Image (cartoon, rainbow over all chains, first blue to last red; front, side):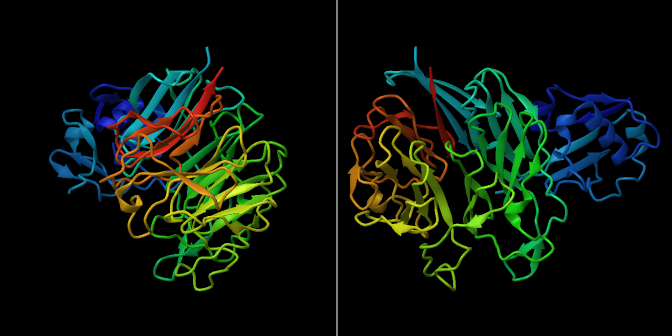
Length: 98
Length: 373
C-alpha cells in the first residue's frame, strides 16, 4: 500500500484523518498516486493539480524521503521507499511566507 | 415563527447568523469551511434550505458546497468550470494577449423559479449555469462573444471577476451581470446573447475614453423585484440609476460625501429607498473622516441622509465590499452589512438604528439575508 499524507485543508475536504493508504499499480509515480487518490476522493480533483491540464497547482508541493519532488516529471518512478510503503508521499501546501 | 438567516462569507470561513423576527438576539454558527475564502453564499428562493457556497483557496482552488438543510450539513458538488470551446484571450497588464484562466467563483445566484438551476460568476470573467443543483456547470459563452478574436476586456488591479448577477423576476429570459473591469451587460434571451449596457457611465481617469462602451469598473447593481426595469449602480466612482433596464444611466450621487464605494442595496418594501456606504476614494478604501455611515435615499437618489446611530463615528477605517450589504423582507425592513474589520452590523428598522451582530469575524466578503417563513 502507498501511504499519502494530505495537508489539513485537503484532509477536511476528503473527510479523512491522518494518512491515506492507496493501492497503486506499478510503476509508482506521482501521476499514478494522484490518479488513485482522485479516483477514491473525487472532491480532490482540481485541488492538487488543475482540471484538464493535470498540472500541479502552483502552491502545492510534493515531498518524499526528504526530497522535494515537485519539479520531477509526473511519470518518473518515485523512490523505492514510497513504492514499498515505507515512507509516505506527502502533498504539501506551500508556505505563504510573510 | 419567522426570522432571518444571514449567510456571511469571510476571508477565513463561512458563518451563519440566525434570529427571530424581532432581530435582537442572534445565534452564530461557524466557522464553516474554516480557513478557506468564502466569496459568496446564497440560498434558493424556491427552497430556502438549499444553500450554495463558493469556497476558494489560492493553494487548492475552487470548491462549491451545497446544503439541503439550511446549512446544518454540506456536501461538495461540482467544481469544474471549463470555458466553452476556445478559451480565448484578453489583454494582459503588459499589453499582450493572455488566455482566459479560471481563478474563482465570485457570485452564486440561484434561479428564482427552478430549484436545481443556479448561475455562477467567475474570474476570469464568465458566466456558468448548472441545471442539476451544481453537480455540473456549463458556460453561457455568448457573454464573451467571438472568442476567436482577442477580447477588449482587461482586468483591473483586482482581477477580472464577474461579481454581480441580477435576475429579472418578471422575465426569465432577462438577466444582468457586471464585471470588473468590463462593465454591465444584459441578456434578453436567457444568456445566448448579451448587450453592454454602459451608456451614461463616465470613467474619468480610469479609461482613455471616459464614455467607452465597455471597460467601466462597475462595482454592484441592485434592483427591486417589483420594478425590474429600474436599476441602481455603485460604480468605481459614481452612483447611478437606470429607468430603462440599463439602456441609459444617470448620476444620482449628489449629496454624498463620496460617490466611491462598493455595495448598493434597495429597501425590500420601497423601491425608491436605496442604500450605499461611501468610501473615501479609490486610493483610500475606508469611510470619509473615519466615520462609518450608511447613506439612504428615499427618493431614488440625489437626496441622501447619513445613517449613523449605532455606527462608529470616529477612528473607523474599515471597508465594506461589494457583496457585503443586503436587506431582509420583514416589516420593517432589516438592513445588514459586513466590514473588512470583521463586524456585521444590522438594522431592524430600515437603517435608523444599527448594532453589531458580531464584531470579530475575519474580513467579511459577502452577506446575504434569507427571510424565513
